[in-house]
Length: 192
Image (cartoon, rainbow, N blue to C red):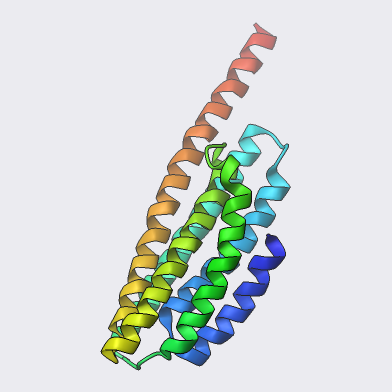
């Protein structure tokens, strides 16, 4: 999954530039975030509760930064409207959806795990939703001959990133508090 996401990041970044699509560029950035998320998740598996919760906090913060970057870049694009190439958007959106649905299928059984594992599930789910939105935007761009559908999808993806990052951060903070409490309680029990 890590290799698929890293490859799709490179491919979709180039395709997003070629198509002039903010939605594809946002989706490419999401592939990068997922690659980093998978790597950090694999590293954290089997480590202490505190380490896993801290890894989830890092992932939540990076997802927030991605959401803010996409939001800013899309706002900038509102003033520099150029019609993206709908055919490239649609084709790349379809390929990205196939890659993400395979990841979602693999991760389905871990969607209710700890914050660290759950963050991987949320990222993969977000990707599949984003791919469907990019494909819909491609159709709308072709039908309307306007950049607005592409920009609206990019705004929606930024909102999705920010919403998911908030959920990850809240879940990770709760787990971190719980791990700290358990560690403090264990220290008191040994010294008491």
